[in-house]
Length: 334
View (cartoon, rainbow, N blue to C red):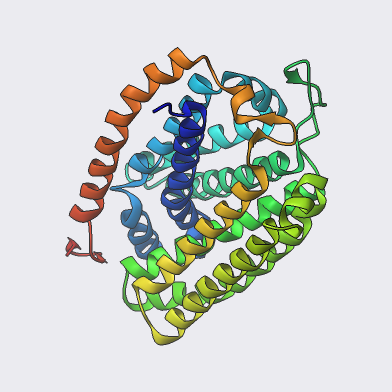
């Protein structure tokens, strides 16, 4: 039986990117909410809630980016010059954020500076990821198997709206994560923020969803002609279900349900993007198969990846299991 290795690898890359978004999204969200903490103790608790897992979460970003370079080199060669500015800003922001994790605990005089770096790095990374996504959705000009657009093509009203949507969505993930991991006044504050951020996120999700079909005639045709029109009903229906569960969980005082519902919003949105893109890896014209490396390279890389991914998943699950429970400012995890 012959396997479509390019299709399998597209699935692996998509899985890596989605896993990064839902895992690193909430700890970026914690950083976005950092300035709104009511005092140093709350900021310490917020950072402690993600300290054991944040660097492991970014493993998936490395896997997704490295996998794209290894198995879809043409896509990598087109996307990088097209999105050079937001991607470089994102990486620099992640560097500042990572350094802030270590340095803010080792100084009192400069702690506020590193708090600002933690917030700024988190917010900038989230915004740049959303802008890059919006620029990818609106399409990248390709000619003779190379990027044919301009330096500022990534910057548009649509990409900025996408950036704000991701920023709000990550903040929502962060708020619901803190509802899950904290208690007392900080939890009550984050529950209130989750209400506002949930409404804000849903508004921008709806706005991006309405604008997406008009970015490319292929998107419009795919969503509003059979069988794509079935997804036009299914995907919004799933979004409404996740939104209802989010608001219901917040109203009832649940700890876990709001977080899982916020994650579901991202998963359903990611599925919607996949429906718009397929079979292209770089819309509107570069398909999965055109961008793929030779079969021998795909086979070689797949062997190592099929060993590596289960190990990463086991390690990630174990880390979350060890540090399960709520953060106690005096006792740690319990």
